[in-house]
Image (cartoon, rainbow, N blue to C red):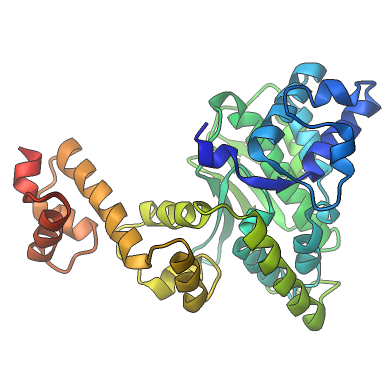
Length: 336
């Protein structure tokens, strides 16, 4: 798996839960933690952080020791709101479900998901929480997805006081042998063979006031989430999230304020965080444009004018000038 992805930080909650569930089945902690570099005493240290690589090692151990591919679903279904620390509290005291989702997306690194999450709303009022951008071992993709979706469903039920807000789940994959276990863990119907992974939310629930909403507590929790996010979020995660969103749209020219809104932060916060990483939004946009321009010119028969339009340039001349600045050659020479 990519090194940056493997070293992303997470709390010990998931590993501690896996150890506890396997102990209920008579499996010792040492076996569950084998190869992870962790011991049971370390899981009881307040504020202890682990990496995604360590989590996935423990998950692989759990699947091997139980011989049950659906065990990842059980772990996710038991990941209640309390497992997310200060983020979980911030979600509980959010004013509405939409507010909770905005908070969750703003502090995505505190969830510890193996997927990049994105909230998509359409003109008809539909709303989906989509999961993409998986960057880990292919053999762990299916159990990682099951764990991700079941934990999100459990989290949303807790936030809404037990009310079912997920209408159905879409999975981009064939129906597995344990499909019935998926529906039980998710608490809703599952459609396999879709073109994306997504939780389809009930749109009427988005504006619903949450049972434990408290504006003062919410603001205090947001400040603590900001501090926790700075400690846990590796330098590349924000850039990866921006690139994923750039690749998902055409033409590729979202303004900074629009990108900030998609990332659930203010333009000022986005500028500040990019500056802390030694870059700025235009540089990231140009880098992605350059990568896509090369792909389009090498792999398709698109006219140069069409490539320019796809990349969000006002005219072909502006694109050709930018391309020559990037590569030292015009687009026609690159294609030749």
